[in-house]
Image (cartoon, rainbow, N blue to C red; front, side):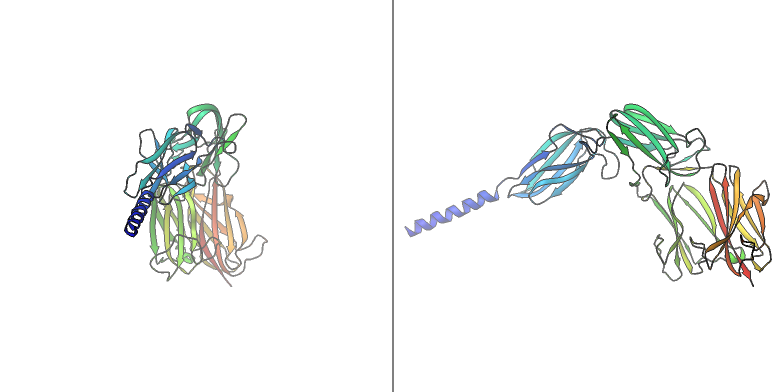
Amino acid sequence: MRFTYRFATAALIPFCLSAALTAAPTVSITSPFNNQQVSNVYQTQHGSDQVTVTGSVGGTNLKSWTLQYQLGSGGWTTIASGTAAISGTLGTWSTLYRPDGTFNLNGTYHLNLYACDTSNVCTYQTTINVIVANFYLTQTTPSGQPQINTPAGEKITYQAVLPWLLTITLSIYPQGSVTPIFSVGTNASGTWSYLWNGTKTGGTRAPDGPYFVKANVTDGTNSFDWDESSRNLTDGYSGFAYVTDPDFDPFNNDPLPISYNFNAGRVTIAVAPAGSGSEIDSTCSPPNFCVIDHKYEESGSHSLHWAGVDATGKFRPDAGMMAIVSEHAAFAKNAVVIYGTKPKVDNVTVTPPVAWSGASQTIAWDVTGPTAIASKSITIENQESLSVLRTINATAAICTGGGTHCSFVWDGKADNGMLVAPGAYTITVSATDSLQNAASSQGLAFIQE
């Protein structure tokens, strides 16, 4: 009896353990339901492009699970994955954007959840259909870069995808403005395209610079605002250059020449103190400072002369290294740079560069551009107090060479008619054309007692 008892017990234990270890994985999707339509058009009512997928994965023989989607017979894209059993939220499906930042096309998608067991058998799965019907807007330019040369007649094409009949209003905004310079609207479904030539409402040409497209769609009761200002280009492009050990003498009309040639991007020119090492981050945080800080610029050759001052107008003799970078990763997806009309102010000189108090100095500069100059001005800033002591309307400046080389005699006085104090001064020459494009350049002067 004792031998028989032990045999029976030994047979029961392996049998129960084997049954537990071979429990197959189980999978289920509870939301969205089969053939459900999802859309970003009615975000606050019953839709979103961020779809929460719920369900469960279980089984003691579970090794891993994957949640994925597919349009038609295309490839699968993973939404989420794991190795542990789960019940509830499996993942969030971005029905609008693919992982690389491109758009998912509208259509019927297969939403699939599958699991693998410890033997690497991955046939445990469930699949449902989900109808994606999102609104989205794309933009293309002749050069393939986010820019248009308006004097050359280039236009940007905006194409809207509307999942059903909606009223769409397309608006163009200058950087930092909440008021559009141009708007156009229509009723459409499917796709609708519009070519914008860089003009304002009324047909006048917009100044050079970055512009941002936004859209509003409505069915008459509900509406949805489209704005990709917070999303950036994702192609990874960046251009980088160094200027090391700058040797220049801005107090003797010898500023630092800077030139670069990049694709369209957001340009930063960062300066680091001498002794910072062999590399410099393109940031504007102290002790660094920036000559240009994330400025939207078109592709091609750019040049300027730097007078050695920071954004406050203070001369920085500690400058030791300069980094110039152009980034797409900081360039908004809905932005385009208009270019081709702005003027350029350069080659600011002060003669004599050092003068006795009470003596006059001649401020000269070059101004070029395709559009007529409407106004010119000169500001005289004291570098110690960082205050502008004189603002001169320079429309009376003497200009030669067809108006491209101008000069103005400064009498050494402030706006109050008193002579300025001895010290260092930053001279800023500015020009504005008839389209309201503005340009400026700087030089340095010194007044002796």
